[in-house]
Image (cartoon, rainbow over all chains, first blue to last red; front, side, top):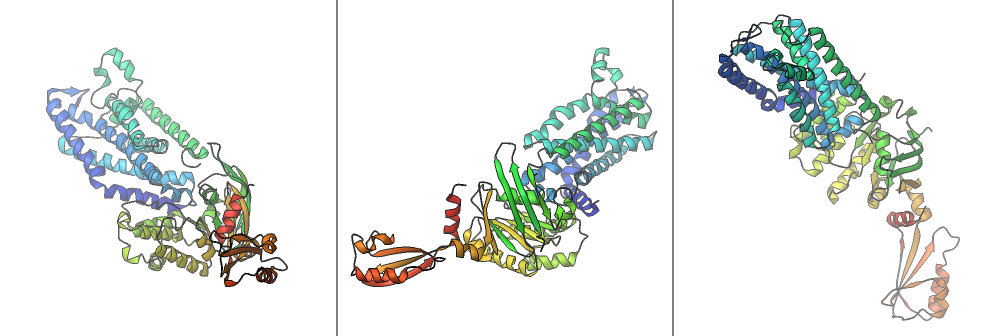
Length: 253
Length: 308
C-alpha cells in the first residue's frame, strides 16, 4: 500500500477546498441559512407540524442531504476531472499507485469535505431551530455512507465527463430534482396517493427518509429499506468504478 | 550487463485503429543517454507512455531492472521519472507544494532538505512559494523536471524537453541533463531536434511510423552512415562537365564555379587524389577546397525517407 500517495492526494484535495474556502464552506452555510429564512420562518410559520415535528426542524435532514449529495458529487467529480482536463493526470497514472489507492485519496477527500459541510449545516441549523437527534450513531452512519456513495458517483461522473457541461449535467438535471422531489421539504404522506407511488421510484427518498428517522424517528419508508437502498447504491457505484479501473475507461488509452 | 530497460516486441494499436508502435525491441543500458529521434506522430511518446504506465500495450513486454511494467508496476514506476512534452501543471499550487506532492505520490517519505537542494539545482529555490501560473514557460519546464526528480528516480524520460523553447533555455536543459548523467541517472529523451541528439546523446534510436529503424552509438552511426563531400571551387566558370570528369558523378553548381564530389569514408580509397589529378588534366584551376561530413540530420532524413 502506497500510504504516502494516498496521503498527498487527500491533503492536496483538502487544501483545494481550503483555498476555495468561500465556494466550498461558506456557500453551503449561506444557502442553508437562506432556506431556513424562506422555508423555516416565512413559509414554515404557517405550517403547524409535520408528523409531530416542527416544520423548521423537519427540513433539517433534507437540507443536509441536499448539500451532502450535491457537494459530494461536485467535489469528487471536479477533483478527478480537473487533472484530466489540465493533463496533470499523467503524474497520477505513472505513479506506483493502484487504482484503489487513487480512489481512497480522491473519494476519501470528497467524502470528508461533505461530512464537514454536513456538520456545518447541522451547526448552523442549531441557530434557527431546536434540534434533537434520536439516534446519533445511525445519523452518523447515514451521513458517512451517503457521503462515500455520492462521492463515488461524483468520481464516476468526473471520469465520464469530457467537458465542463457534462460535469454539471447530472448534478443539475438529475440529482437536484431528485433531492427536491425526494421529500427534503415535505413528508411523502402529504402528497396525493398517485404521486406517493411515483415518489417511491425516487432513490433519494430512501436516503432522506432513513436520515430523518435518525433525527426524529419518523420516516416515509422503513429504516431497513433505507439502509438496504443506500448499500445497494454503494455497491452499484463500486461496481462501476471497478469496471472503469479494470478497463482504463477514459483514463488510459 | 543486464539492461536497465528491456523492450521486447512491443506493439500498440489504439482504439481508433491507428498502429502507433509495431514490434519494437530495444535494450537500454544503465547510465546512458538515449535519444529517440523521429518526426511528429512517429510513436515516440507512445513508447515512453507505455513504459511509464500511461498507455496500455497491445502486445509485447517491457521490463525495468528485471521487473515487468504491468505485473510489478510499483517497483518499475518507483524507478522512473517522466517529464511530459506539454507544460501540464496546476495553476494555483506553489512550486514547493507541487514538488512535495510528486515525491509523496511516488511513495517517498517527505525530505525537505532533498527538495530544497533539488530546487536550488534547478534555480527554482527563490520561486518555491510562487504560484505555478505566475512562472515563465522556462521555469514551468524546470518545475516539471523537479517534479520528475522529486522521488530520486534512476531513470528519467524527457519527452521533447526543448520543444518550443529558446536557444538559451535549450542549452540550459542540456546542462541539466549532463549533470544528471554525472549523477548516474539513465536518460531517455525524445526529440525531433537533431542538434539535441547530436549534442547530448550517447546512442540514437530512429523511429518512424511506429517502427524502430535503427539504434546505434551516435559516433558510429555518423561514421557508418555519414557521407563526406568535397566541394571544389573553380577559378573559372565552366558550362559543361569536361569529358574526363563525366564518370566521377560530380555535381556542377548552377553558377558553374563549384564541383561537389560525394564519397564514402568507409571505402578503401576515397579517390580524391585521382579526382584532383583528373581536374588538372581537364585544364581546370582550383580556387579552394572544402570537405564536410553529413550531419545526423541528413542521416535521419535519409532514413525516414526509406520505405520500410
